[in-house]
Each structure stands twice: as C-alpha cells, then as structure tokens.
Image (cartoon, rainbow, N blue to C red; front, side, top):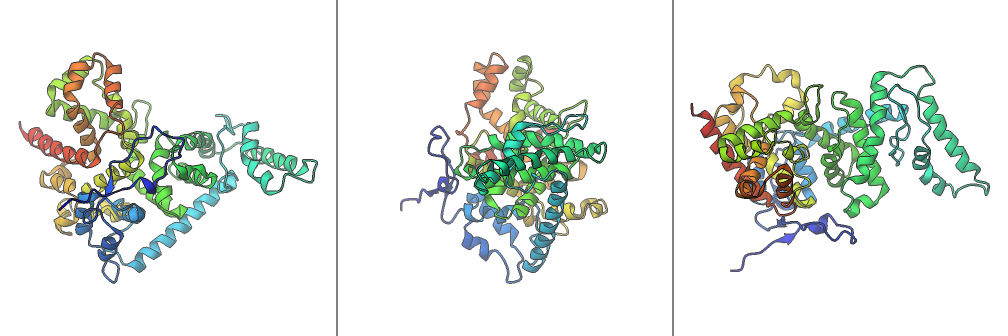
Amino acid sequence: MWRNPGQPADSYYQVRPECTDVPKTRFKIKAGKTLSPRKWQAAFTPEGYLDISKTLSRIYRGGIHPSIRGEVWEFLLGCFDSKSTFDERDEIRQHRRLQYARWKEECRQIFPVVGSGRFITAPVITEDGQPIQEPLVILETNQDRSAETGNSDGNGTIQSRLNGSCSEMVRKLTSHGPLDQKVIQWLLTLHQIGLDVHRTDRTLVFYEKQENLSKLWDILAVYAWIDTDVGYCQGMSDLCSPMIMLLEDEADAFWCFERLMRRLRGNFRCTESSVGVETQLSNLAEITQVIDPKLHQHLDALGGGDYLFAFRMLMVLFRREFSFCDSLYLWEMMWALEYDPDLFSIYEEPELNGEKAEGSKGRTKSIRHYGKFERENMKNGAVNSESPLPISIFLVASVLKDKSSMLLHEARGLDDVVKILNDMTGNLDAKKACSSAMKLHKKYLKKAKKP
C-alpha cells in the first residue's frame, strides 16, 4: 500500500503572499502518528486525568496537530499537572487570569498605553527618570483613536485634545516626585519591546493585525514588570510570539510564556561579568570536545572556542534555523523528551521543592511518565549530582557534528563558520535533529563517565 505522505501544516500559519523567500515547512500532519484532536480527547479520563505517557509517545512519533497545540503545550511546559481534574484546572486557569489582569492593571496605572490596543516604539523616559516628549509616541498612541472619533468636529480639536492627553500622561510619570528605580527600568524597556514586536514573525498573516501585535507587546511588558531580574531582553518576543497564536486568551498565552521563561530565563540573565547564555556555550564546548575533539580544536584555532557563533540557536531555540511551523514542532519534541511530571509542583510550590528527598524521582511516579531524555539523565545519575544539561545544547552539538566535515575543510575563519551554519536555515529536519541529539547525549554520558 502507498504510504500517506501527510498533510502540510503551512495552512495553519499563513504567510503573507508578498513574502516569497520563506522556507516551507517539513512538518506534515500524519494520520496515526501526529497527536490528533481525537487521540488527545481520548487521553483523558472522565474526571480529567491525562495519560501522559501515551501522549508523550504520540508526540515523539509525529508531533501535535496545530489545532490542539496550545492546550497540549500547557501540559508540556508545566502549566498544569497531568494528574489534575478538569475542575481543578478550571480553577487554576481562572485564578491565573485574575492574577494576570491585576498585574496588567498595575502596569496600566503607571503607563496607560498598556492594554489600550496600541504600543510604542520610541523612548518615553531618560535613564535618570526624566520624561521624554517624543512626537512618535504621541502619534503611535493616538492614531487609532482619531480614526475611531472620525478625526474631529472639523477643526482637529479632538485630535489636539488627544495629543494633549498623551503629553499629560508622560508628564504625570514624574508629577509625584522622583520615580522608583523599578518603574524607571521598566519604562526604559517598553520602546525596545515595541521595536522587537514590529520585527517578530512579520512574514505571517496573523501579525498583520494591530490587535495581535499589541497583545504581544502587552504580555512582554507585563512580564518585564514582574520579572525584575530579567526584565526584557532581545529574543524574548520570538519565544512569546507562538503563544499568542496558539492560545486565544491573552492571560493563558502569558502563563504559557512565563512557564517557558522558567526554563530559559538563565539564558537572559546577565551579570557584569558574563552573558546569560555563557554557561550553556561553555557546556557546548565541553560536549564538542568530548564528542569531536578534532572539530573543537579547529574551532578553537579559528578563535571560536567560546562558541559565540551558536549564541542565537540557544537563545531563541532555533527559531531562525527552522521555518515557523518546524520550530514549533522542534519545541514540542524537545519538551516531550525532557518532560518531568514534577514540573507543575516545582513551579507552583518552589518552597516544597527543596524538601523533596533526592531519590524521590521515579519512586513517586512511574518512570513512563518522564520523557526519554529525562529518563536517560535519571538512569545515569545526572539528576542526583547536578542539574542535567538541557537537550537544546545537544541539539546544537548534533548540528555541529553533522556539519563537522564541512567546518573542518571549508571554514578558514569565524565568518565561514557563521556562513556554513546560516546556510542550514530551513534545511533542518526537526525529528532527525532530536534523534541525533538523543544519540549524542547517550554517547556523551558514556564518554564523560570514563576516567
């Protein structure tokens, strides 16, 4: 019998017709392999408990159908416990939506553009806390209102009143004395968020709508307000963008992004002495040195021993190396492989996490409830000794290994290394990449154990 080649998933993430050079997705929806809406519904008991082991194995085989991707991601990222009921999840969801609304209102009280359906791309404040009367901000925050009001009574008085209200908003920032440092830092990030939002996934029809752009800006602005250690850094808009598309409710998209940032925020935390992702880059160097010492020596000789050329891959999880659809497929494969059933309780009750016995993993839950990558770590004792390395590092290492021959023979400088890696864009296979990463992980653990 002829094999069903599968249905391309591009139609779920429409590209603007003028964008002709966008790579086509390799991901195909395959009956019997891809986790379908029917199989997903069948994975729940009448009370709402999810059979996570069956779900994970289905994701390994063929990814997730785009129509249910958002709700499955909520489990993979630890928003919900697979052993919770429908009612318990409804209660948690309502509580989170209220919490997000409170945070958003806090932000709106400080800067009323939040939640207005608009966003800014110009600075509104100086580093010493003085307001900037930026004409572009006035234009950006009032252009839609003038359209709504029909632009005035004929003399432009409504428009001028709106301009005045925007200037008033900026003046109010400092009317009660010097601003708190937290407020200054947050206000300083808002225009940078706006600039990045304008650049994020602009090839997609979805982001032709102003309301979707402003939703992305609002979520990132609220996140920057609550996470004072990280605030906002370039690249976070690439991680948040899919959440907006997959989850209709803004608060649900926010919490999915917040959970993803729990995993990745270390990449964005920068100190005076180091870049956030530096630890992962040094881990990548160590893995390559163990797996392919000749390649490591070559890269080091070219001045790439710090592996900074792989910075982007780790920061935004291959968003630029894959088509939009394929990057989502890669993410869910990674999260399924790394799945830890304790994730929900770790995030919800961090104070209880330290009290858990070191060897409790695997005893409290069946080993089948863990992802394959996580199981390997448990088997090799990596979990008990130190934090295991994320699969993303092994993905990058597998890409380097795959391109080893080309890098050794053609790269005569770091520019060549970057070019060879950039030429992969749109040509990587997500499933093969994960499979290679798993093999490399096993090989590394085996070799690293040897004295």
